[in-house]
Image 1 (cartoon, one colour):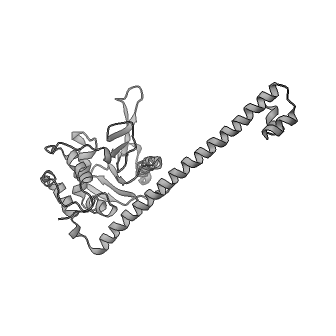
Image 2 (image 1 turned 90 degrees about the vertical axis):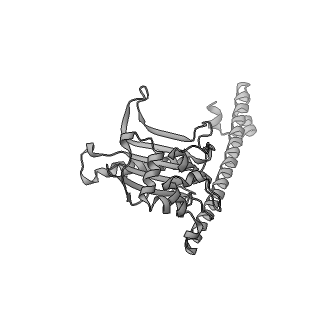
Image 3 (image 1 turned 45 degrees about the vertical axis):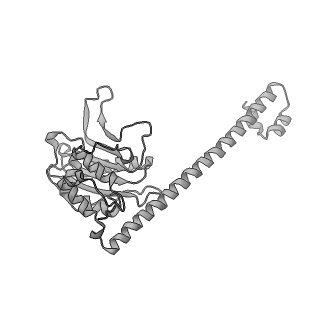
Length: 286
């Protein structure tokens, strides 16, 4: 039995965008919800149209839903990290929160919005933790919070290899996302023992996909590969431009230092201009 990677656009949406009970299990496991906040049921919402991130037009998977209490949940699978992605998440969640008032509801009817971002990349290089929970807190009294928006970012490459006897649902779902890759043919029995994850695994069986779906699956990986190349090229270009800019700035600073020294020693303005290529106005300001 061969499986496809659940992080692909096609497979991720097939599992979490078509099976609300699987998404409910996933969100209850991954989100920092109290016992009295557990999600009972879900319904899907249309994906919001938001500005695209430069270079990352095809690597973001977006699933939106709300529960029986009116709380909204935005789930995104992101293959690469950029600071623009963080801004996009805040924009998405804030827009979903504000749009609740379009039906002329009072402010006290606003329900929380949770944004869960699964990132197949490392962005907090100095922190060992893979799970990052953000909410609006009082800086001096962190126990005091403002309800409305909460954000969870999961750095999948940091997820540690767990003890295989660990049965916690959060760990099992993260193992599902990180251990199952394209072409995987052997799955640990612990994942099959959970009914929701076992069903999600069945959704990933390569034999369950049509030829056209597999072509779409491959095209997504091609787009990911292309965008990675573009990102690396842009990063390299930025480093080169930064180095050149630094050299130019250093050269200008050197001319200014020379001009200032000549001026202190009483050298004529004409000679300073010829020696440094600085304008008369620039020299007079020294």
